[in-house]
Image (cartoon, rainbow, N blue to C red; front, side, top):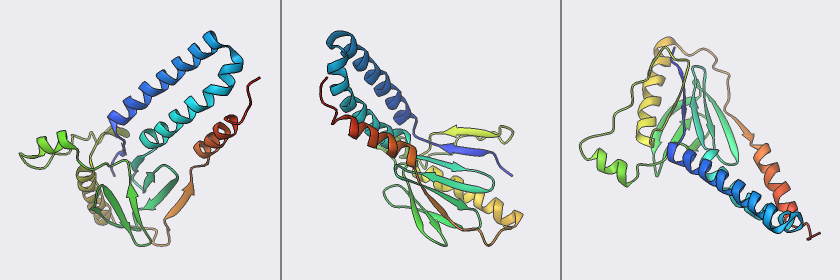
Length: 192
């Protein structure tokens, strides 16, 4: 029907890579210059800051698949079957409207100053989507994402929605939360 489209912010991804390298460099310097005892006490704070950056910049993702829409935010992930999707609206970002609940998609961020300057000549166009490629990662703002969702929703309506009993599912993102718990507990380790 259409390829799987993953929407995530490219600048946020590059920033996460930068801070991961920075946290790794700080870790190596701390271990080699100050020793393991200081590193054990200090590095959990460095990695806790990186964890916060990771959660804010890397975690948000919106996946538009042929059978469902998946919204991954910092704490929760939602799976929205196309049968439950009713539309999207813009309100300081993108909000997916379903028959069950409205879900804010942090990955589809609102337009920033640079994007607003480009948009003064009209709305930003959707990039070309190659229908032959099974999956693509795109950097779209909230209005572009709403347009893409509208286009794909119309395709699903034309094809006929099948499973009317499907529900919106919410899942806790446990792995990053457990990592935060470990880092928080590590801050209480006394110096050796």
